[in-house]
Amino acid sequence: MSANTVDLQQLADALLAEAAENHAGRAARTIVTGAAQRATVIALREGTAMAEHDSPPAATLQVLTGRARLHTAGEEWTLQAGELVAIPPQRHGLQALTDVAVLLTVALR
Image (cartoon, rainbow, N blue to C red; front, side):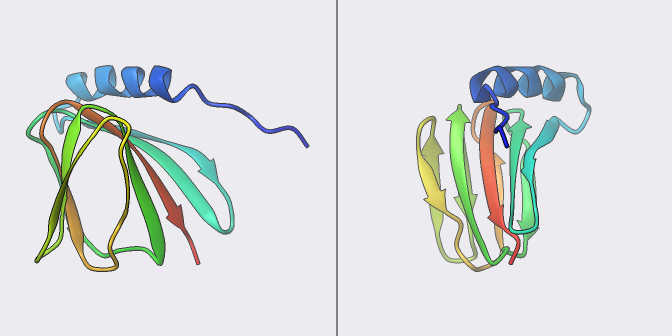
C-alpha cells in the first residue's frame, strides 16, 4: 500500500484563496479520513471564527500560515505558523487574527 502525500503549503494557499471568495470567509478540505482519525486543513479570513463547539476525544491544531486564537471558557492560546497545540477537552472556539490556515487532526475514538 502506498501513501498519498499532500503539499500542505500549496493546499493552505489554495484554501485561503477559496476563503477569500466565500461569503463566510472560510474553506476546508479533509485530507485524511479513516476509522480512527481525520485530518482537515481549514482556512479562515482575518476576523472570522469557528464558534464554540464540543471537543473530540483527542485532537491537535497546527497553524500552517497566519495567526489564530484558540479559546475555551477559561483559557486562550495565540498561535502562529509552525506552532501546534493539543486541543483541550472542553468546548472551544477558534478566531482568525490574520488570514490563517490550520491543520486539524482528530481522533475519532
